[in-house]
Image (cartoon, rainbow, N blue to C red):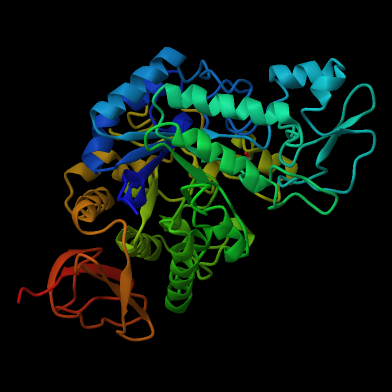
Length: 506
Ligand code: NOJ
């Protein structure tokens, strides 16, 4: 198999609304992102994945897409998006966008035609005379009634009507959308809710027909040079998951088992092993993800007594030890970066931002909060605008009043404050990604047995990664420490610390 850029890439996730605000309206945008491209270059990422940037009423942060072939005016223009792609390419950074094929927006032309009563337009969605008992993933019924009495299906918010993938027009539309963006230089797409497209009486997850769609999409992407398809595929069964990665389907998919894994040595080893054994037969590189815009920030999750992913990681109100969470996040970052395959960094992870759990309820925007009747705090706490510089909010984000408020305490976490601090999280990521480029990425690993509470392996380049999840300091194998997530203790590796070693020269 040829070594191609995506197999070992470090991919940085940009949640555009919260990255950087170029025009001062309090919402991040393309102008802000373009101005910060040098920061991403300096950080050492190979690619940027942007959450949806299309025109959208923002009922679900842009995952309610009104027009798949344009840019949300709050973010910029199509011409600006093209400039951004060109500028990223000049810096040798690839651009991956989000495509949302499971559902649309109630503000899309197609849905408006459907609402107007056009029967052919209704066939592009799931309109029925009677709803069934399906519940929306955000809570409440998955069906909403329209004025003439029919009901339409929405697995997520009511503003996100599901497409009917039994309809060939829907297939044609998305093949065109892929070409539209590949023609504009986009290097890959992240496919939202990739396993949910088909529905039957028994359910809507992982129906076999979905693979025909991705085989066709692969043909489309193969018409271009090295464009990739990345699936958001949350499935409990790894064998079913790997089917999406067969050589004629998607290139990679997010590894949610790793993201959801508790900070526990046996569990980590099990998940890493399982990941490798399911990916190897299909020839796809694994991905390693610690966070994204849907889950609790690792600094907060790893600081809790229960680091598992119960309740989607959203155990708000359950205390978190910030120092412990921070130390473990550093250790987890070096572990993730050392594993074979590609690695994702969600914006702010490199700054060690915690989850903001004390947002006033009236500022919460995530539909998950409202639709759960307030029992689920939602995902706003991991989507707070980034702190760039200065001593007080908005910390150089832009404007005076960011769309979600930043905590005062983030003055210590700004990119500017961390740049000059050699021990900062930012510098750990910078150095780690730099070393990773030469010594890690795609390939295999060989486990090292250093005790039940130590996760250790050697990579193809000879680099050794040792993560100590025990409660006492442990000796390191022979070699030179190239990087460690915290200071060593008299040559020993302290608890909740990861070190990378280059082998002794013979
Ligand atoms: C997964 C996305 O990551 C999430 O943010 C979104 O709410 C759902 N899919 C629905 O599009």
